[in-house]
Length: 217
Length: 225
Image 1 (spheres, one colour):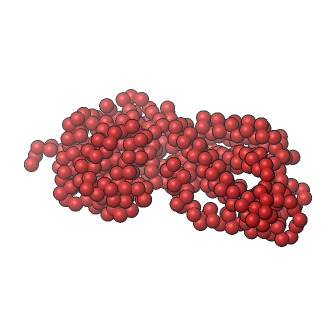
Image 2 (cartoon, helix red, strand yellow):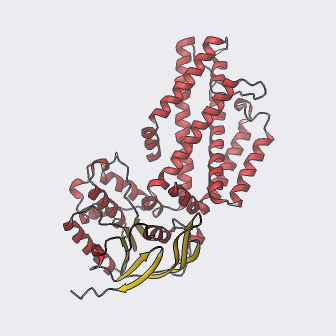
């Protein structure tokens, strides 16, 4: 699987948010997007998910411009901005509701909850969840469908260090399964050791591309 | 089901408020006129509205009722876009989502209007000691009329946010269909059910066909707000 971003720009009401961005994402790699808050990372992720249409340029999934076909990218799951679920349902019930849309079985739901260390709290209402638990549930909804493209926006927000370490390993394992993992964060240390390629967002432009040697430590 | 639970939980005050308003209108007519139970019922919902006669209370009833149901349609339509974009839209096609939405708007509006009718029928039973007969026909006309207004409002909202010519064309088609029956269109009980059904099905097909192609332009506006 390959995603090609070609000269993409995005503006809202004349205000430029992203300007002439070109990138390529390939299977089996973890990509990090870093930049301060407001640098355009979340808008870029929404463009990748085709929730927004580029003002200029194109995004190709395996050579196909799916936005022109009025479709969302295939085999893709995303957690963008804050995780939102129904407050009065439990974590498990929320995932079950989403699983109905994607025809995912119960086993996969439980498996993903175990991965993010949320299985013990799965029967608590979402309204009773802490910030970290909400974030874990958001990651569980991404992982449960076994997607080929994983898009995460600030995934480690509010999550304790032990689980963060485990999640990093999960994302590395997912990439090894020939998946594309894209993680955006404003804290470079969160992802520096796990990503293969790091893109830096600054004022709507991708200014630097670093290829990380994960074996340097 | 999810939409119905959301509507019930988020709009308890609105449901109570609308019932309060309709009850107030009913009692205003009850204490000031000699209308039969059937007439009281029709007047309370503004089902026989005549703008030329200028009965402000009937006009108010019609507009109030329409506004309530337009609000319902918008709150159900926008809910997922405001909060659940990543969770829902990568799992379901836009066409399927639009279909789910416009069907659930109809079901929730149907139940809500039915509930309003029941409350008024029971109230009339207590004050007049007999049931209002033959309300099935006005009810069907009323719910289909409301649904057309809801779809038309959503169409206009979508056009404002997308500037799509095809959406504008759809709006014009529906408006022309309404203007053709302008003499009776505000008198809901006078419109032939077949005509209303045809207009309703046409609006439904146009909406389900054209809006999915423009959905990401609507996402941008909803999120921006």
